[in-house]
Image 1: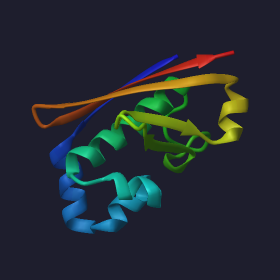
Image 2 (image 1 turned 135 degrees about the vertical axis):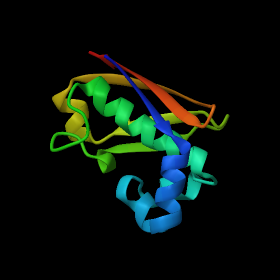
Image 3 (image 1 turned 90 degrees about the horizontal axis):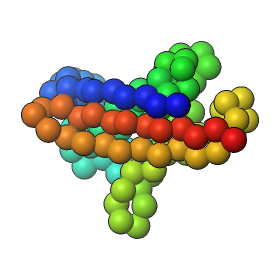
Image 4 (image 1 turned 60 degrees about the vertical axis):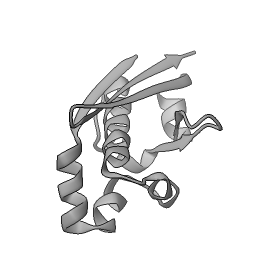
Length: 116
């Protein structure tokens, strides 16, 4: 299953300017917020969570919320995604792969979910 999302970095920057940490807390947990050093990183994380929910085929909503998807970094600073156990079981997920890119004022993410 594959999901993709593109997000305006400026849009996320405006949300952060207006609502500060409340904007980030809407879609990120405390550990993820610590990783955010810029609006482009925040936009990339937004795109990852949207792309993940699209790969699941449900979008962000009742089945899968922003906080059901956890983003962290590998030792080489590559993004990685972990899903709540209930989602792993419900969708019979074996692995999740993610890629983020930033260019031209946008952040984009592609997520590939492999099932058993």
